[in-house]
Image (cartoon, rainbow, N blue to C red):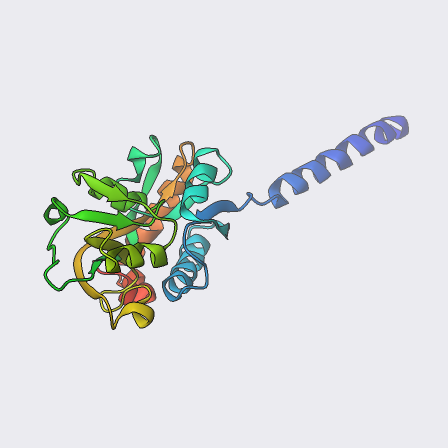
Length: 239
């Protein structure tokens, strides 16, 4: 009996330690990539909302900013598990990506031009104009495939300046609210700008992240039904 205890004791102790380690080992954080600076006001609200959503779903996450093109390339390459800042048709760029419902926020789109006569009222209304928009904004890319003349500069500033010198008829800029557009303080005295459309913006998960996507969708649907999602996002989201 004594010899048997000496033989089984270490095995038993090892088994207990293994079980403790297995139970105590937390799932790794979900890795998110974001194409907008994380300190922008709407991104601060979005990150706070994500904190609540992930905590209630029993998950954790990390988030990293990368410029739009790099963010997409890194997501496609499997360096990240999700992107919380893409439009409703993002899976056309990333087949198999999973859209988490409902939407996190809303993006408003302005047509900025040198002339008050340039006033499209929809995406379809852009046809016939020469347009520009920031390279890497794939939601705008998808919505303007019917436009014959498109340019994609590397910054919002360059885009607006192209419109002001009439190299293009208008620059499309994405805004976090319906009452202010990027660089309005700098160019508002020279440019004419009008909201012509808005899109819902979603959290997308990579293929293979279906279980995570399901947990997040369930949590977000419950929060939306109680009005919590809208309250957290405030002016940066409309139902």
